[in-house]
Amino acid sequence: MERKPGKNWWFLAVNGLIAILFGLLLLLFSKEVIQSVVFFIGLTIAIAGLIFFLTALILLKKDKGVAMIIVQAVLTLAIGSAIMIFRESSVDLFFILLGVWAIIVGIFQLVILVNIRKQLRNKNIILFNGLLTIALGVVLFFHPFAFAVLLIKMLGGFATIFGLLMIYLSFTIRKATMRPEIGSETPSSLS
Image 1 (cartoon, rainbow, N blue to C red):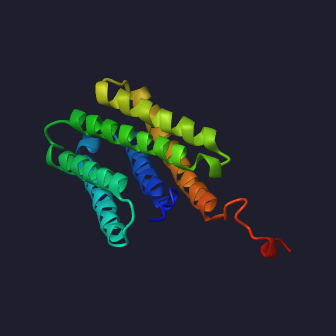
Image 2: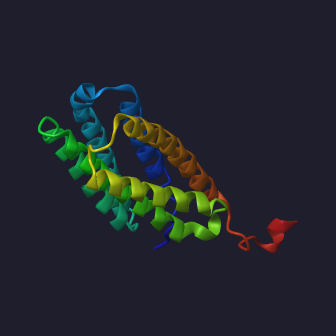
């Protein structure tokens, strides 16, 4: 069973889009508007979970390793569903669940780094991004809405930049894994 660790580069791109939506939400809207938009953010996260789950089913039929994608799918779907269900009772729950999501994405980035570190030149960017994502998640989890307005706007800017960086990294990973391995060239292909 052949396994290519960078095959799911699109995972980072999808999560990058979610981070950009979150960042723009924090930058552009007041608390009252955020409360009414939380449902759609939860819906977006739940749809991403369904996409991950369907991808896992397709890869399972092809006899590929899917454990990490299934865990991601279940957690993403659960977080998105909880945000949709409890959106009116507390915005704090939204930020706590968003913190959990950020921790999961950060850990996944570190797992990607460990699995394909030999094929990447930008290892430090992925390491920094993964650790920063985990730190953001921890802060959101333990202090969900205790930030001042300025800090929330700064967080929105960070999340937008972070989302763009995740999309960039997804394409970098895709490019790195599409290159042939060094040393796998045959002498006839070198001439």
